[in-house]
Image 1 (cartoon, rainbow, N blue to C red):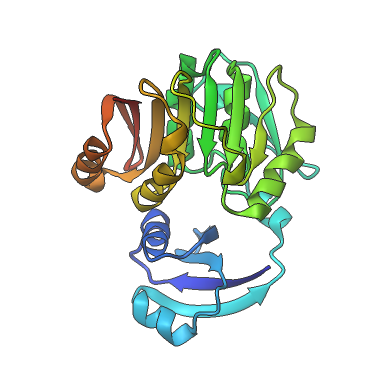
Image 2 (cartoon, rainbow, N blue to C red):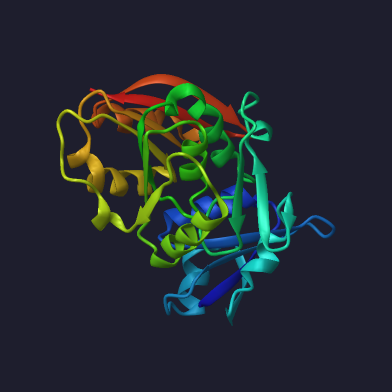
Length: 269
């Protein structure tokens, strides 16, 4: 895989840089913050855009390097709990104090390792809402939230992602986990046929512009009364986001926050 490694000017946080690049249409692969010299780099997918265009589009980018062959294991080694190629995540450490379940993920391109506040928010809000529920994890990435749903007692779990490499990463993680209900992973083509009687618990950990696109691709399979857990929204975006969700007929039930990021639980009217 070819990718671009962008150096970000000081004063731009990791969250802000990733958000601005995502809103600009770039696919974030990973980010590296070197605390010793306050230096941030963000890797994005290489789509062939010239350095000049990217520099003009994103004024906070100070340097661009084109690279290939991402060492995903080197990236995932930074995660707490990494050992022998796998990262162990104990749910009790991530907002589920009553759970003794652990999730194991191998290094790979799928997003999601519980290090980001938005992933922690969704995991914390899932709580008892997964028990005996049909869960649809949209933008499933590494599969981490799908596996969390399975560990928390979901009846069925479908994880979908538009990135085939992320889907393969999630499928690879199936062999490292054992729960009574194991997730199914695929691209959106695996979505079930519409069923007006079937209610889902939907997980969407992504920025609001991506949520809008994702919603259009899944709304036809969701019955009234389905629930949605979302994150990826900064505190300063709250009013705009809630206005957007009201237009989608989502009814706000619960709200939480973590390090400047917000998480929400809605029902579909």
